[in-house]
Length: 424
Image (cartoon, rainbow, N blue to C red; front, side):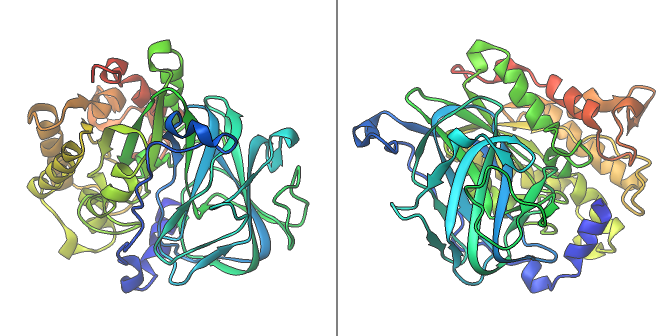
């Protein structure tokens, strides 16, 4: 599936694949009013609790008078909620006829008494300009930590889903023709995918200040090969760990991984340097960043015959330094994660001895260079002690590049929770 997704993207026109984002980084105001009490303007603080970085699709989904219902697994809860919708890669305005949010009851079902209409400047519909995003008005909804929310979008006209997040590892439901945004469950006759469309983020409101960790990465952060609908990506496991302790239970985790992502070149989605402002700095409440990027800079040129895009370890490190400088300029702490082992990967041309030497050089710099505010050693946590250039078999999904559920949990367990708190 990994290679088929990458190949589909490679078949899209180069101009489209490398389309720049003109106006997607819309910074949200940290203090805003709740839906029911305008006087609470000075009391509600918004924090990103879930995210999905937008990408150009290989083959856009066609929607014609249908309803999308998508599931978002939040990290922290709140007393109110609002949603971010993105038309980052659209070339014309996106007309959303109706949008609703509810607590998921599993599958396409919702808990009926939690269903809420989402409005945009008081209107139940919205038109999102090409390249832009919109933030819904807040609605009162008690959202528990680690809850699943269902966001339903009805499009009365024909829509091409030109903005997506391809590797959701979560079932998305597309109804048969009709407006089923408020339906307790979608009727039979529709279809499902494991991709998110237009849904860019969920924010929760609270009167107490909360902070967010943003996980910036590639398919290993995106959760490739983890169990679909089970929320077993390493950022999910980290969010669950944070909830186990009172002192960290108000810290959100926002997964901004993109399968196939690189530091220095576009591939599936914009490169990390290009998307950093939108996917990290624009996240409400962001305080910490965990960067796990670089293995695709090493492996993809050989796997796809992109010799002109081969980079050195020094170039990858220079890219990391740029991310660090930009995070620090906005007052964020940034933690570097070591690149995990990949010898023996089943993807032809991805691994080489020279590539392993680059990985070792990048990891040595992350561990000893002192540029990051702290180091998270995912490599040490997941490698085979008897063969350190390979993943531990118990943590290997089978492709010798991506961890399985146990491997992702081990990654989360390797993170020192004392790195997150008011003292950091």
